[in-house]
Structures are given as C-alpha cells and as structure tokens.
Length: 150
Image (tube, rainbow, N blue to C red; front, side, top):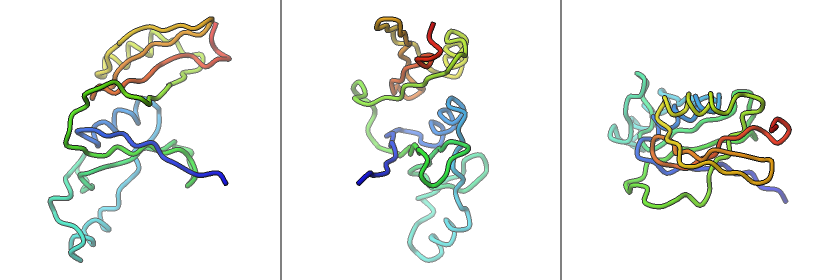
C-alpha cells in the first residue's frame, strides 16, 4: 500500500517562511478560510489568540502550507508550523531545488537578495549544486536538473 505524505518545516514565523518558499518554488500559499476560523472562535473551539492577521487576512497563527499551483488533493504539500525553540543543528532532511536550464548563478543571486545565505558548493562527478540556507537557517540545495547539467 502506498501512503501520501507532506513535508513539515518547524519554524519561528510560518507565514513569512511559507511566503518565501512559495516565491522561491513558484508555488502558492494555500488560502485559509477566514469565515471558518471565525466560526471556530464563535463556537468556542478556538480563541482569538490562535489567530493573527497576515497580509490583511485572518489566519491560524500556528501554521500555513504551500502547494504546487497546478496541484490536486494528492499533489505535494509543504506545511510550515510554529515551534517555540530555535533551530540549533543541521537539518537531516532538506529540499533539493532543481531549476532546469535556468542559470544557477542568477538563481543564487535572486535567492540571496531575498535572504538566503550561501553555505558551500558541492560536486559529484558531472553534477554540481550550491547549498544555501533560507531566512530561518534551513538548508537547501540548488542545482540544474540532471538532464540540464552540462
């Protein structure tokens, strides 16, 4: 039996980090249902302190998700959830962002202009990548896809 899954990223500011990753990947932040949130508060299932305003919309404070813009219910999803502790060690799991035939150095320049930090360059045989960190220090790699690598 095959299972579905999502990747969850622990972070200090889920909405800002979701916005950053949605722009980075060309994905979209999943909309949250403000009417449903208000209904949960009215029914006593949630409290105003469980919410905040993000880009002028009422959202759940503890998390948000991004998804592929052409996705379906079964498409990959990344959830960003609020945690109280800071990141203290290297990630054991990370994203590999394959940019196809796009210019790697131009992509790195765009990412660093938006808050990413270059960590190191890697290479194995003909394949090369750049390891960076996102604005909260989570590692990820950028490379061309195998068919685009020269």
